[in-house]
Image (cartoon, rainbow, N blue to C red; front, side):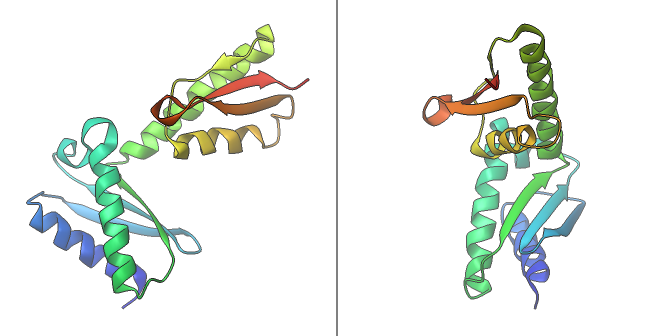
Length: 154
């Protein structure tokens, strides 16, 4: 059984045990050993949870169980429900681009709200790409107050 089959079968079993209804599970290999999983549901709020905490917990459980079933073969998964994380990611990137425009107009550093390491990495990566040579990012703060500061390169 390949990794995608193990992921789908295990997730289906978890959702049944949790008594959570879903309409479809879609799994795609995004990169080598990185899988994106999207659960479609008529009632996604129970799977998403407060600020996506249920998705994070379910993703962690799924990864640990599947690693054991795949003899600790290394792979990563990104679990999503009705493209919730995808929309969140788009919103964070749009916010970062608005703040970058403000930095370019005013020359003053701009602080983004606290966010997860995943979203901070997305913004750092964005600002290292073409067209952002005049911008730099740094992470500040600790724990759940960790955030990005966007500023002009000197």
